[in-house]
Amino acid sequence: MHERDPNIVTSSLSGIVTEQGVTVRVNIIRLENEPGWSLEVENEHGTSTVWDDLFATDDAAHAAFRQTVDEKGMRAFLDQAVVIPFRP
Image (tube, rainbow, N blue to C red; front, side, top):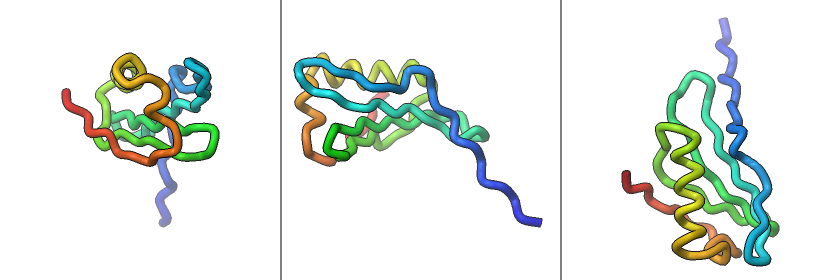
């Protein structure tokens, strides 16, 4: 019998963020049968910034997004696809 693919759970912390004249979509998701949350930030041109490691909670993922904005500004997400390593 064929197993079904797991559902994707989207955090309520996901959504559109506009600050400093830059608009991005923050995607915080996990598979229904996995505990770790992934974080992706997509700019208005479709360029994604994806964190390499998973987060224990969706709050931790959102905090990593906020920390990046606080440290580097929203311009960090403009047209440069990068992987940001997560250091707990």
